[in-house]
Length: 499
Image (cartoon, rainbow, N blue to C red; front, side):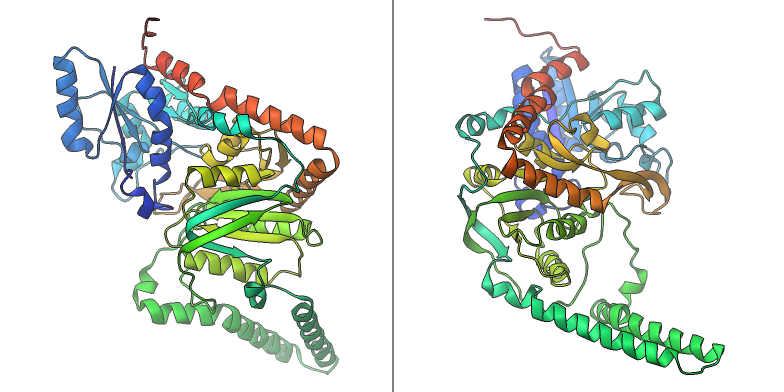
């Protein structure tokens, strides 16, 4: 069998494409390669329009079956090909686009799915969404990215120890910001700044109460309140908008607002410094919670992850939250996170921001140092980082919705509550509400953090059982053996004879 595979982002581009649209498809393709190579020969193409049909003709002339696996959503899959084409897509919503917009028929996924005749996705939710539109007999299957096997060596050498063990991680070319670093003290909340803020608030409150006792007409009161809120708006919002308008000119007026789950990168003028990429040594110890995400992807909901953590562990200096960021433009994201922390009540827990690519051993060191992997997103198509850490025996703090329904439960995670909320499909330029996302229950997230901490510090035997459960759960969910069998059955491939 001849497999032709493609993703919009290639191996050469991935370093400069982190966080951009469709970048994660490259990583999914990369994880599928060992499975595909066990079933036939694989050719990675860069231009489907010019390469696919030529390679298909060569395979056909040689009598070899050939299929094109396009790791891309249906509206970006090349359809005018003679070669049989199968889109391999990730999708986090409970419905798929079933209408066209802005004159583009391909935005209606029924067009691409009908033309291809079958599809591969990574979770049961998407299978149900496609079947609801294309009919129950449409050939579609869920095959999660087979990442479990590549961590076999890490699982073999990893010893589950108490959270006090120390691990050193090298970040060769990146940025590390640590709230326990004294150089960040000016940006962190402290007792004096909090006390000053409280005193100012009480002074304003007293002044308002005194003013309220003065006899005023109803019209005067309304005018005073309106003026007060105008001043608040000007100070908090108007100044930032004016600065943005001055920096970007009249184009600001034409800019279309983004709707989550893909949030716009903020354009702000920050008082914080610029951080240059350099080598760092990061030492982690205690109870470490880790989350990997693109900070400009609004689905990932880092604000809830951060604020709930700082609320849960404000008096726990041995609790650490690591945000491993994935985006080439990291400055404003780090500024935003630090400014968010600066507005929080004082906390003793540790927050570490890591920007930069971690090579194999360094990424594995981060996994080893981690006690729990964290997810608080509004929706996932499969979530590779969560699957990777679970595959290494790291229990999760995560909700049970979208793709995570397939593998998250109380046996492997401290489950966070959520509820449905209306939203738009991520690439819909109209921002029309056609589907749902999941809002996180913030208090439930705080409780889940605390329950996880208590588990590893007070009942280590339960933690060890959850770790074992996680490894076995992912073996049955995203191993190469599972992917190979599903793919062979879906493509009607014969099993290779035993030599």
